[in-house]
Image (cartoon, rainbow, N blue to C red; front, side, top):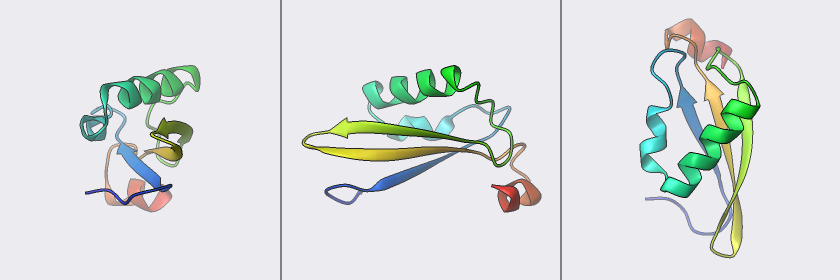
Length: 79
């Protein structure tokens, strides 16, 4: 489960696998993240980040979409 109130959420995304971690988000939030990634030309390179703010109820939540390249150990270290 997720904490209540304001919190940050990190979503790890590989270059080839796409944002599989978006399945845990609502349709609205997943669409927001996809659009922010598209506009920011985010392709999942290791260490790349897209910062997204989403409104949930009366609070805002920061979602960091973090690229992990091919998902190898070195890619995680760069991220």
